[in-house]
Image (cartoon, rainbow over all chains, first blue to last red; front, side, top):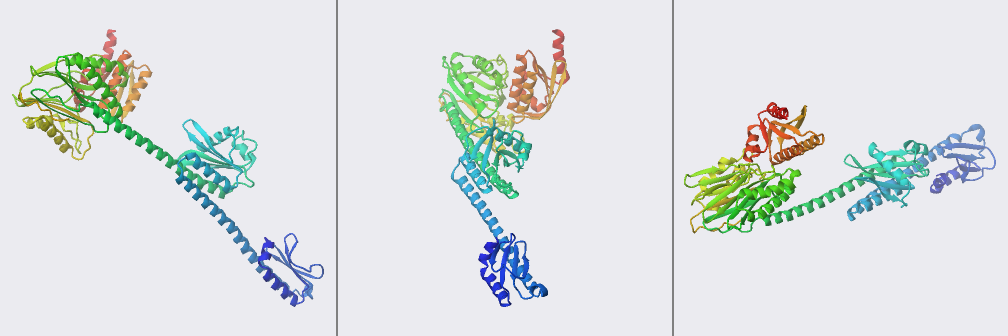
Length: 517
Length: 117
């Protein structure tokens, strides 16, 4: 330090030396704390005057006349020595500030490198190992590692410098778990402290700094720095802490991105499922002499648990089904597909709706017993020749029938629990003769259960009123009136349940046009 | 949803309170499975403090019913409020379950059956 000072302030020192020579001194020197002369000469003989230059050394003047007695030059030399000490102190401070600045600069560059890496590649391992490299470089540690937590435990993600897997891995995992439980950094600055923390600490580890990487409050990874020439300082810890924070942010971002990818894929799959499901509904409605038919299925979400279907049996009867599966979402959709398929398979084999339901129940009750799901089904056969409608209702509501002769809208209640609840079907077959102007409306409970913002339900009575008021209109118009009445009632309340409806209106012999699905 | 249980001899009374819907049904399902694992197949489910049951709630009760009957027991319901009773009537699930006015009535039905046996 003193030599650097001399080279920077040679001119000042020479001026001082000259001024001492003019007053008769034979020599002038600056001596360091160990007694080595760093500036000046002629210290071999004569009376000597000396003044300390702070803790750094001293100024000496030799051969002054009468130096020993008067000491008149003493105060002068002392004040010069104090001045030099002041300058030196400033220089030392400046130097240490420069070191600090350089360190801060290094850290800034490291942060910049890491955030650049975070932006340029998505690979978490690559990111964390570049982060570790910076941590090792900046702290001056010999080695470092990062352990990342996953479902089954810990995984050593990166080592700096790269080292082959070995017995140290076990220690790394134990230490990582320790930091997770502790939630705070841990520093061991001696072999003794290391052994206190972990008695099985590998022998080559003398110093250790462990820092948790957190996402929220959860420790998701641990940065470990091993051995360095000097102790791990508070500054080192602060730096690694900042790096760990950055690492936590990177991990969180990566997880969020992964979640988004998964969500997007699920959304795409749901959309595909929805289009498959909609494809299972009849694309066109049957054309039957004397009937005007309208139907629609409005799922509340992408996929739903409602379905309707039309199928002819061997005797030329028109079968129609409307079903509503309990639960929502994908499980309901799967169950709906199974139910519809079973009904399709059973319908051609039987002329009795009850038998069709029984057939489906046998499979659903036995095979899906543990699932606890069930499906309410209204199934009917219409005979166009006799105009007779035979139906069985397994737990389904509402089924409403507008009888033109009386001008009333009847509520056909179910006479047995849904399909899949009991080993046997309790519902019986019921037969009604249809007359011109009669309207059969089979709906899912998404209509009567539709709620407004006050939590009030639309209810079955309102449905009966809408049907009665629109009974003279076409099947398609009745369907539209029902949908719009429920929508107006619910206002801004979102549709909570699937809404599915079949409207079957008995017309004269000519009116046999279907109204599209 | 609050669930409390009380054991009276071989019958377990399961008291539910609150909304019984898609959000709360999993805890009830868990309780049923727990009882099944413990060999408790005679249940009285008290719904007197339940103000709403949706289709997932119904499905959970049906799953419990099947589970109990397969194990030689039964799941009886007690104390249905009128709004809840309407849902059971619309779906005719009132014909699948034994439904009683209150816990005592359901309990004596179990014990009556035992006396005969």
